[in-house]
Image 1 (cartoon, rainbow, N blue to C red):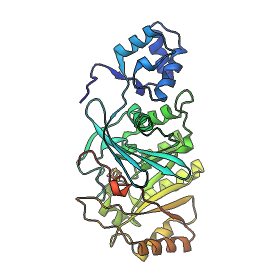
Image 2: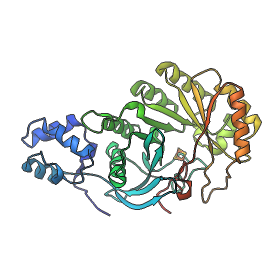
Image 3: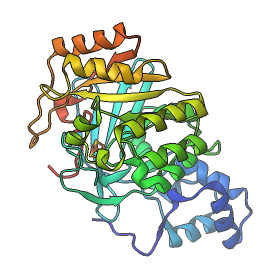
Image 4: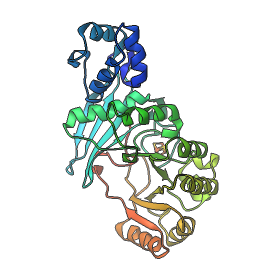
Length: 343
Ligand code: SF4
């Protein structure tokens, strides 16, 4: 474990906050943009910041550290997917996954180490929640992965370990950090956030970040079924969730993607497909069917290709936009629901 207890992670700072830091160290404000730019390039030490005066670099190093995580394990899939177990300075571990798509490279990052939502098909929640990540630690996963793979990353999905809306402050800061023009400058439409359905935060997100893509992990066609696999449903009712989602689309004009992991004998029947179709019909919704990624220690089995295809057909015949997700990295347990901190 590397400890930086007495210092602050500079990756958590917005450029305007770095201006205050620069001023306190007796420097001009424009230095902040230089520092922020170097951080976004993945600088691992203040010494790399060549156009920043040496005295300022020394001053920064006395108060701050650059919180890039260490890759304590790296696995590469046959399909080019790279999964890393990253460890931060205090020993906190998370997994992140780099994926290659036709439209470009993407990373799935974690918003928390562990998760307290308790979805019964998911590995991330098996040891509960360790802690939420800061916005800088979320950004650090993107920077560290880019340093490691040497590849550009143009899309970010916040769909790894944790429930992003259970860490709304960290998530908001992350979006502002990675979107800032002086730094990584990632377009808001290139970011997707996935929630298990925390209704008040869906409403908040529509106001705060209407251009960021929203995905909702639904995995059920009615309240009773959702309660079986997702304890969050006991707090936030299925039909209330649907109502909040429809309001989101009306407010933002953006569609919502609903993730539906198809589980053999649980939610893959024709009756479920028809029920789901009636919920989804006629508004800006899109269903993404995910053949369930099996998890060691969980009893659920993936639905076979035939039943996924039949499920898809029923949705299509009812006029619902639907795709089947190509599963990447399942040979290294890097697919949805398979991320965890300990093996
Ligand atoms: S699916 Fe998402 S919200 Fe549910 S336990 Fe896993 S990480 Fe948490």
